[in-house]
Amino acid sequence: MASFSFIHTADIHLDSPLRGLEGMEGPAVERIRTATRKAFAGLVTEALEREVDFVVIAGDLYDGDWRDYRTGLFFVAQMGRLAGAGIPVYVLYGNHDAESRITRRLTLPDNVKVFSAKKPETFVLEDIGAALHGQGYHTRDVTENLAASYPDPVPGAFNIGVLHTGMGGMGGHENYAPCAVAELVARGYDYWALGHVHQGSVVHERPHIVFPGNIQGRHIRETGPKGGYLITVADNEITSFEPLRTDVVRWEILRVNVEGCERMSDAAERVRGQIEEAINSRADGRMLACRIELGGAAAIHESLLVSGEHILADARAVAHGFGEEAAWIERVVVSTEPLRGEDADAGEIPGDLHDILGAAAADTDLHKLLRADLGDMISKLPADLRNSVDDAVLSAALGADYSALAEHAREYLSALLKARKD
Image (cartoon, rainbow, N blue to C red; front, side, top):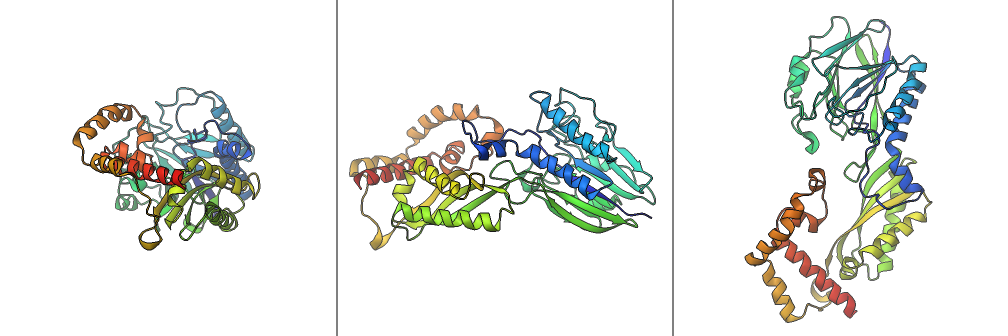
């Protein structure tokens, strides 16, 4: 039996709106805005250069309904590149691009085959001895076990199950189309091409049950290398299983310990060192989109706490020093602590104000006022925004932890007073 190869990818999220770029401009920001398109075009180039026999897209090709037809036209153009080389593409729709969510439609090239959303469908590639089984989503919230209805394997073929699933809520994702590993193994397929979980992982081998992850990180919770997999099969056995790295922008969190720093310039120098190290060891020639987290007990804790805008601008200036598109700083998070003991500055909030703020943490009447003022506003925030907050103050507000909120206010005011005193 002749050998063949295919690419397994998922979670393209074409033209996904990227958070935190509002009002920003410049080459680095533009590269981030267009990253999902460039990553997908790069994936198509890989398919052409590797001369694969087919491509599988296991859900969430789109991020939701198109704002205009340009998203669809871009996809069709990329599929046209593959059509010219005779490479078919098998697409399964997931929760983000469920049939009911995409209201605009374009005629797809003949090489694009879309799995039915009504019931499981099988595509048999008789010339190479492969069979693909899958069912797409009709609506976003699919709570039934779709895999339970997938057909038996085609005898003599290399059987591939294509499924968009949360598999128990892996990685914090919604548990759409729930199923278990043992159930997929028992189906008797040779490979499960999964989608939905954005962190790539091989859940099981022989048969391979694989989440390729998304092809391009879109924000700071999608760090590290991104892409898909190139699989080679001979005599119905996987002979090669190779990761493909398609991301054009790589998200990373850089943790900088500023313990021992006496001046803000000392901290800036440590930030510069971390950025340089990350460019050299983690970027793989790509632009880095970084979040800087400053930690450790430091004499400059108060200055850092009240100088957010300056620290961010300084970190971005440091990044620019390595080249206009070498690194971009998303934000700087200050998680430092004040010095304690002999080295600590004794500066404090004035007594009366200190007592008021100290009592605020346990003041139930104040908590009621905060709940009334903040609760209604918070309830109106989009769910995805409420679920993606990683700022300690906002997290306390969202969690109605008004004692913690009062403590954050006390610490900030103390730092502000000390900074003005200095």
